[in-house]
Length: 134
Image: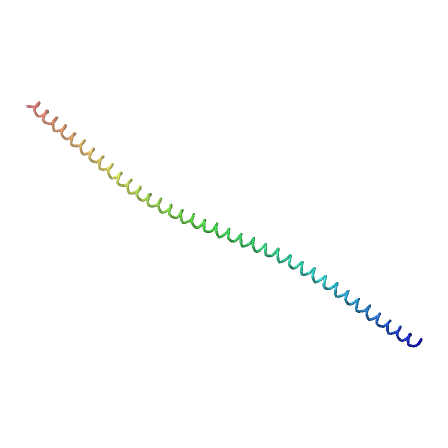
């Protein structure tokens, strides 16, 4: 009986050792799992941050595109304004030349009238002198 009890005690001790080792392995894998869960949570957080960054960048790109379109519209409007001003300048120059020509003609006509008047006066005086000499 004792021998049998001794063998059973030995088998029980071996089982207890195996169970203890298995339990230690379970604890090891449990720790590994917890570490993996922590790493997964950290990666999920980094993904959220990255997604938020991408959203911010997309919003920035949209805003820059809007500003670019506004700038293009402004540049187009400025181009048109410059073209309009250039056309007005050409018209003004043409008007000025035309006014200078009219002014020149008026001065010429005025000078011609003065010459004609002086010629008339000269003729009158010549005739008066001729009469006085007679």
